[in-house]
Image 1 (cartoon, rainbow, N blue to C red):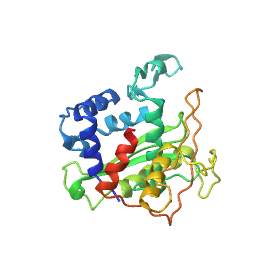
Image 2 (image 1 turned 180 degrees about the vertical axis):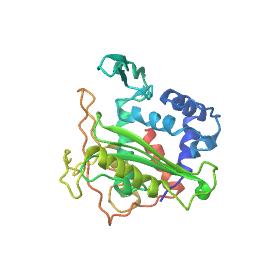
Image 3 (image 1 turned 90 degrees about the vertical axis):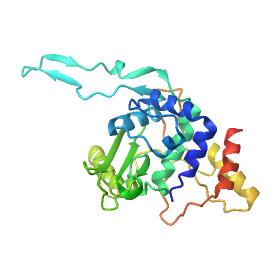
Image 4 (image 1 turned 135 degrees about the horizontal axis):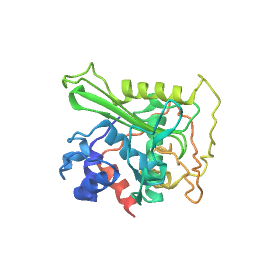
Length: 268
């Protein structure tokens, strides 16, 4: 279930101008106004902008400069132009390691048992976010597969004349298309064995601890709502832990009072 009110509340408490500034640092160049409706997608951006804005969550926190051409050569192999890989990442770090850690945790939960379950790859750690416009005007899915050297990709589905789709959703056709493309990229065979590190989840991570603590206080089930994704920033590689989704597991529903309490605990 998708709950949009939490995004508005979080934007309000963070300061909508701060949210706008972060979006622009992450790569959003389209005109967006500092209104709360921005947190619900009221302002349009291009698929390239949106996908680029997600990359800092998976490359260590740095914004990127998207490009179309990587190299131009003559028929004889002489290089006329080659994109300098060192110039693609901007020098300013947008997100702290702690922020990246928590966001990866959330993005992984989306593809494990959230709205993006249909995008989950069988053998590669998968992270993502779905989006569906009111009235089914369009839908999108942006996600990342693999570790820090993996790939981030975005899918947009809609009509050029902005007419409503046939009830296309981000967690439906967009997520399925994304999965098909990434399976081809990684050459994944059906029912392949995982090629990533499977973490022991007997010890909950920070976000799980917060929610489990809340559940204990309020006598709710102790099924974790999120799984920890370990990111070791001290090395050039990112160690990613993942847990296959449990198809029968249903995420719990939190009302506004529950969400408010969780936000307060996260702030502490």
